[in-house]
Image (tube, rainbow, N blue to C red; front, top):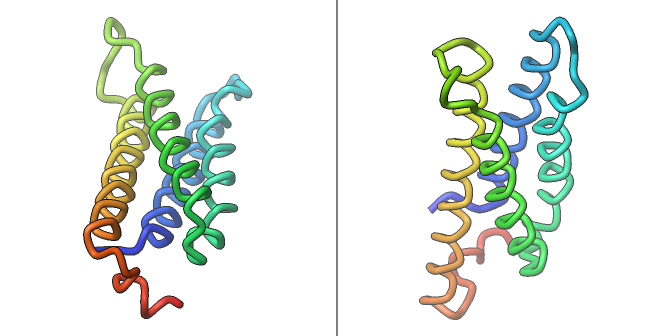
Length: 124
């Protein structure tokens, strides 16, 4: 299983990159377009603590990742949906967040089943 800090780093990079693309692609440059970039920076800041296996941070990152995925989905208007750059990037960011959250939960379950932190021995 991939370590949560690697998944968090990749998810944060996707959010930052896609958020900046959305911001600079829109000529009006609305501040709400930077929401994904903001959450990506927050998740990137938590990567160090995930590497040190801080349980509070890992649960917070999981909740924040799910919240970010839902916020990206809520920005899609089903009546106006078309496969343009804006909606494709929103779907990509939401999908990336949900996959990352699935990896986090999978690592929680695997760690709970082993009960001895042996999946993280190479990091400690």
